[in-house]
Each structure stands twice: as C-alpha cells, then as structure tokens.
Image 1 (cartoon, rainbow, N blue to C red):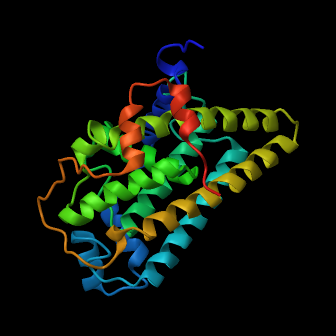
Image 2: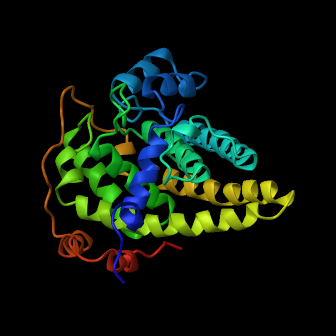
Length: 291
C-alpha cells in the first residue's frame, strides 16, 4: 500500500511526536541538578561531584544505590504521568502541532523524562547539552532507541548496546554523532522509529476508546497509562544497568567525542544496512518484542 508523505509515514509520525514531546516545558532534565538531588542521601559530596564531572560509574557508586535511586525515579514519574493522564492536563499543549495529539505528547514527554534520569544514573552523557529548543539528530536517535527498548524490541536493545560499547571503549563524554546519524546505527534508528510509529497509533486508539466511556473514562485512561509506563520504564532501567558503560571502570576524558563508525561482523546491523532503503512495512515486520 502506498504511504502518504510526512506525518502519514509511521517513522515520520513517531519522530514528530517525539520532537514535540521533547520541546514541552518541564520535559528536559538538568543532568547536574538531577544527579546531585538523587544521590544526596546516599553518597558523599566528593562522590557526587565526581559523578557529575565524570559519571556515576567512574565515581564508583554502588549498583545497589543506583538501582534504588532509579526505582524511586520510576515510581515518581509513573505516578505523575498516570495522574496527568487521568486529568488530561499538559503544560504547553497549545504549542503542539495540530498533527500531534496532546495525550500522546504528554505520555511521550514523561517517557523522555524517565529516559534521561535512567541514562544519567547509568553513566550516559547529557542528552540535551544546550539551552535552546532544538533537539539534535543524535539525541533524537538515542531517544528513539531508548523508546524501542521500552517497547521491548530486540534491535533497539542491540543498537543501544552498540552505542554504549562505542562510548565505553572511547571513554567519551558525548554521543557518537556520526554513527547515530549516518553510520552503522542509523538504519536501526529508522527501523525502530517506524515500528514505534505503528505502536503509538495502537496505543492512541486504545486511549481514545477508554475516554469515550463517560465518568469511567478518566480512570481507565489513567490505569492504561500505569499499566504500560511502569513496565516500560523498568525494562529500560534493566537494560541500561546491564551495559558496560554502567560498570565502574574507565574514567571519562574531557573533550573526547566518539565520531566514527565501529564496523563489526554483527548480523543484525548488517541486515539493517541492507534494509535501510526498504519499505516501512518490511522494517516493522522485523521488529519482535522480547518476552
């Protein structure tokens, strides 16, 4: 079936919603502020300072502490997004593009929030390094892959592991721009975005049906959010905590940027390269949620 242009394409639809959500007020998490606040009750000032200047892994913060803080953040964000879903309230909703439903942008906004918090705890760099409204392509790519992990797609797990491996080997402080925007990981980003565009439509339909029920609709909608958001956040936490980047090993070097491709004999990535110019439907069929 011939696809329409722009927002009608699943990949474009997902990217438009993710971009809109990332620009909503209160969605972006200040890495330094969050780490200082989250670790204050568990770590010394020296450890907190090093976690901010380098990473929590470089600071040697115990995994038990990071897991506890991560769980606290997940509970906070889950409660918040469920309450807002029931109330159907969202800051900045009037600024959303007409093609982006407010409830979906709100949901995605809280997914971006928890993705940042978990990433910072498990030693990823600042995803939003500037104060402007723009979101660079590498950040969009990483967030897309994080969302893919949340939805349980195997290729997203593999791609996130690949990015973490690049950064761990190079002890870098920034995302691997080239690999995420035009290199070996880019085809995986596109495939995951197409898959998520379809899943987003299914969830939107489920919410629309629940809200059509008088009085009970708000409760059903809030419960639906709770039932999906919590396990997705836990899935991302588990994956990020398992990566080499989270292990207390190498120190981060100032100014280091991973900007090249690491080409390895990796079947999923070879397949992705071959499928880069295929149809969205074919890409979507390759995605299978993990059990």
